[in-house]
Image (spheres, rainbow, N blue to C red):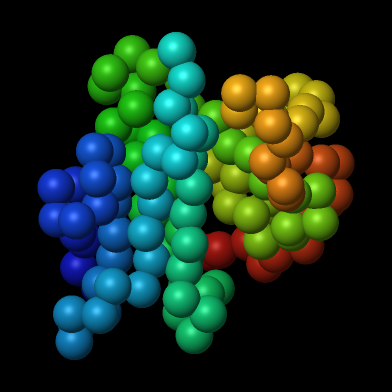
Length: 124
């Protein structure tokens, strides 16, 4: 795997991981930027899931957010177990359930992490 630094089509503060053949298989970016916080979004190609790529990419984005003295946040749908597991691995703690709105319009599936226990295998 090779890292893809920000500025290579990933936007400000984005990070990605490529396979040796150059194929981009995981990406994390700030998906919602507020006055003081940035919500991190991550996606990994289905065939490459379970290899720890999402936490690696998200950790780089979170580190970048912190260098700008901002707060990183994580939002997901309550039943999105994989996302909840990544958030837990990165040290996020669920303070409450929220529904995020933009200009008064709810965003489907954007509910803060639920209390669903992490069922993903712990990495050694």
